[in-house]
Amino acid sequence: MAEESGAAIDFPVKRQREDEELNNHHNHNHNGVEMEGINDNNSISTNKESESISSVIPGWFSEISPMWPGEAHSLKVEKILFQGKSEYQNVMVFQSSTYGNVLVLDGVIQLTERDECAYQEMIVHLPLCSIPNPKKGLFSRNMPRYHKVEYCPLYPSPQPDNLKHWAMSKVQAPYAWPLEDVVLVIGGGDGGVLREVSRHSSVEQIDICEIDKMVVDVSEQFFPHVSIGYKDPRVTLHIGDGVAFLKAVPEGTYDAIIVDSSDPIGPAQELFEKPFFESVAKALRPGGVICTQAESIWLHMHIIEDIVANCRQIFKGSVNYAWTSVPTYPSGVIGFMLCSTEGPHVDFKHPVNPIEGDDSHCKSNGPLKFYNNEMHAAAFCLPSFAKKVIESKAI
Image 1: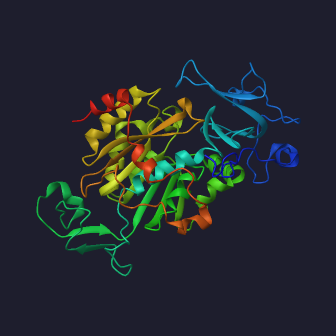
Image 2: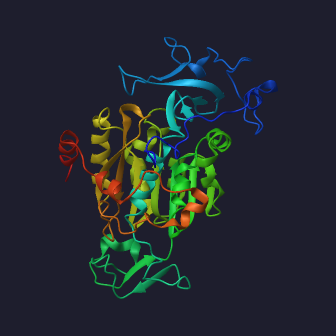
């Protein structure tokens, strides 16, 4: 993972913080976010917020959940930086010995400074690199948002003038494609998905709907290199329920929707159910894409099986499952469900809008650490046991 042997300079391992940044009067941080469960000597209290701190090995965080019974992943804790309870969940940040700062929601690791790139980069660039950059070769910035062209080599299928009635028409017609992309992020309050979406110059507007404002505030304080995504002027933050937000948007609003959800328990449960995917499909334009967190092939094949079955019923374009390696996630891997609506064909396995080699986004967001063209292609290579189950759901 290091650029040079023996020097992991790209990945923070341990960030020193002064004690006065952690302990203040009345247990409040300088951003006004209330802190709970930390006593004067920076040890962890025994209230509910700290149940995931192992009592067997003091000073270690152990991730224990019914989502992965019989196993746990542990990290050594240097300092507890924040503990609190929002309206929706318990929130904790601690400084680990080997993975930098760690964000934990309801006892489950959401990200660490060291390996967050593997998840954030893949969940964004797998879908966004699979739809064309409308600014390259087809359009002028002075054209209206939708502009007809006589021929589009990337999309050889017939497409009618009225995009909303694609499925109802078989008439040959000129092609159309938006001048710039509009992207919605559901969840992802830490800002890492926003950071990666903002690397794409073709994106005109980035909406994010996050249910928990505390996650946003805590991330801005303790994960500045992740939450930098909020600084992009194209971003609009909506605090609220993502399911309700999707139901309210007009049909065909978005070119891409990225669902950065936690596990299907608690506030994220609805994001794994069929009605939610139906709302996503309605909110997407023809040929629009969704990428959603889709659990681990080692632990959750029953959940993945249901997700695939629902998506094949709802999305009439491409439906694919991909995965990547994230060391601090249960089993060390996490999956993604990638789907497209009926319309211009999307081949997720062969990106048409490569971001690798384009350094224009590196000045503000830093270089890519994980994603590249080879990783993109490899993400769709499944082990035999998973491939058999997923392909069995093909209609």
